[in-house]
Image 1 (cartoon, rainbow, N blue to C red):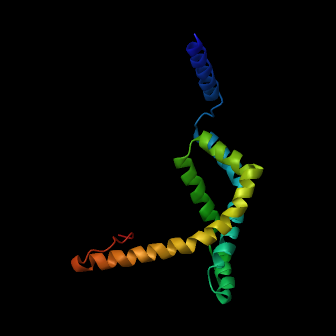
Image 2: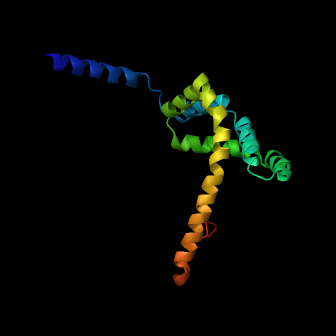
Length: 152
């Protein structure tokens, strides 16, 4: 009898949880994307990333890097690409969860740390990729094998 009560309680939770789901329509996805973008404005995210990444360059080059990234990169193009990709890959419920999290105090705190985190880890990623590429090139030099050109 106890097992039946436990199973009934689990079923009730599962049923009630599914009743709170957002219909996964393009309109609902877009509404949740707008909430997400309000919580994580792309221009602020890009500015923070640019500032932090520029710190990986020599001091005399930092201003030029920041100028290039802020004056010549079109944030509207990046935002449109983000929206289109989010529409393709996330459900309305997933987008709601992202907007809820990044709109929360905890999410805002995490986002403030994301730029410095990326600035710290990016040189390691770049270094490792270059190291791996060197090993790959050495290993494949004998048979003239190379990485495929992504432009082809």
